[in-house]
Image 1 (cartoon, helix red, strand yellow):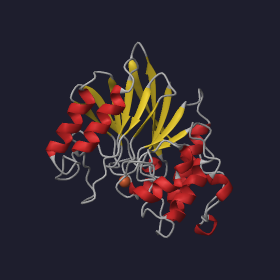
Image 2 (cartoon, helix red, strand yellow):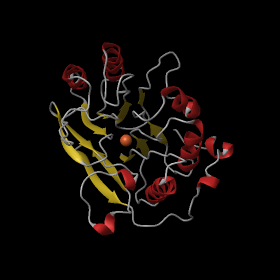
Image 3 (cartoon, helix red, strand yellow):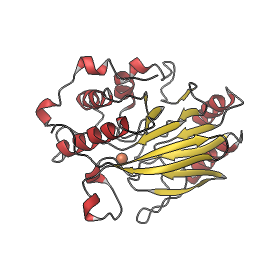
Image 4 (tube, helix red, strand yellow):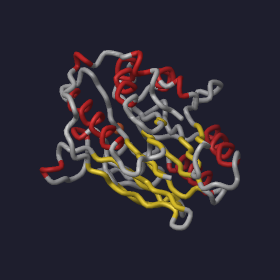
Length: 276
Ligand SMILES: [Fe+2]
């Protein structure tokens, strides 16, 4: 079971670096398509777009439509729940009766659970009692397989300037940690949001954060030759050694330069995104 994780593409069609963000996203998907062996699934851990606009999601869908593996997405704090839900409605993994964009994917030897950690009050994460109940229900729906959990906000301490916590309250983070540990079957947590690489634990569960795919928004120190090369993660699961993660540094330039002019919605591409 191989998962390619991408995060924080922040497509913004009118930003000064709009072309670059598109190129970073496109070249990352092209690199994932060339992986051997191919990944079973691609998970985008949020901040797909920067303003939550329909035209931004249409551009993101057109890029994701080129992915050979099924694509699953999470909402980040820069996403808009309702516009994202509308854009990815064809994938069918969002529950129509809930505002929250959380779900489980059952098609693989490792279950994938995507969480909604958005707050209506700030860019930080939140995890209210209703989401705790929903997470426990998702975990308990199957009792034999290991589970990989994906969140936008990292549910462990990652030092960024003076800030170590990326949830609004330590209580919300503690509730999420307790829920993640309650079954003993969650074997890894993968997150985004802070735009830099980090590793830690959520209780006893290993957890990592990956840098932003958008190279202009990436945080941390990188050699000059890496400045224009997007980074993503490949997570390999095996029953014997659980999870091993590899950082991929995208080597090739995109096949064609994109401009804001070709960033218009492409309905046919939107319909061909593979979600399962
Ligand atoms: Fe972000």
